[in-house]
Image (cartoon, rainbow, N blue to C red; front, side):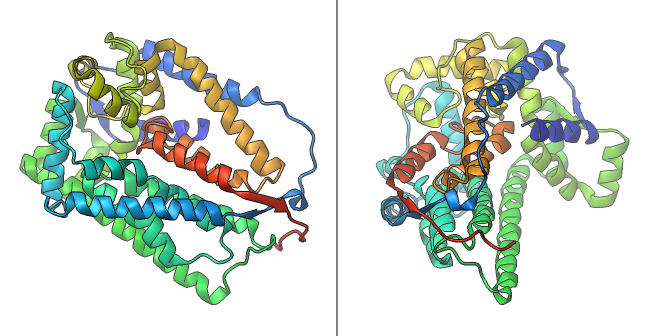
Length: 422
């Protein structure tokens, strides 16, 4: 956690972001430090028992039942998303962006959701694709790419298209990368085998193509939004007028001279995507005076539920964020927790730290192969604390629900094989 936030702060300082309307406050930075410290204290509260780290203590995992459950759920998500987007022309990114803006406006006004029943059902099922990716990557005898594409990636791609954003596919790629990295640690244990050297370059090529495609998609989304404002140059003006964020100074001049307006805009927006949590959480810590939202702000499912029960209350809370200038931005995990629970969130931060430390002990020290399923999600929760909490980022509450289903469905047995070769 310290490494992620230290790198974030360093990046923010190095690049020429300038706050034009408000400056970071000491109060805000102190509260940010308190929340991070609470997480770190939680990691130290997990008892450290002296145990022998041996791969022979691992369990052989039969994940067939979990794969069946997740395959069915991912299949349902794909079908329902196709039914939802069939007549909406959402493959046009400008249309998807317009619908996403309409959804944000509806939240502010306390209006009922305009989402179809197909979308609402798919919203509950598509996170199973994330968990399927990890289950298959970790526990399959040999990874089958077609399964990862159809049951892991496809529902996530359709969710990205249906919501007009980029978070689901971003989350999916990162979780797949972490899971395949964990698989390497299990090679040679029981049924797990590695790819031959002739196949490794193919895997690397596939990953390169995925990353290029992902970058191209993100760039297209951002450029379409810039076009709506009149172009990249005008988008910098929008950022100054509406966001209160400028991109000026000697470093900015060098970036513009080397890359031009369009690429400089992409650098500005890509990095701002990750560092804005420092700014927005500081604003929230310093000036938020709206009601505690008890998960409505930070958890998609809670927002969807309360929106149907008390739409005026949701609109009131979000209106406070709009007046503060933080609505629509990423507040980081800490800002999100503060708006939802106030300083009581310090307890939640401590429990979160305890859970991540427990995961570390189960996976790294005790070599529990069933807990390796949780590892990528615990890691990604820390990485994306820059944006939101693990339960709040990219429908995380539902994702962790499917993760629990999969974890309880694993069949465990003793593994007596030799330790893998380095």
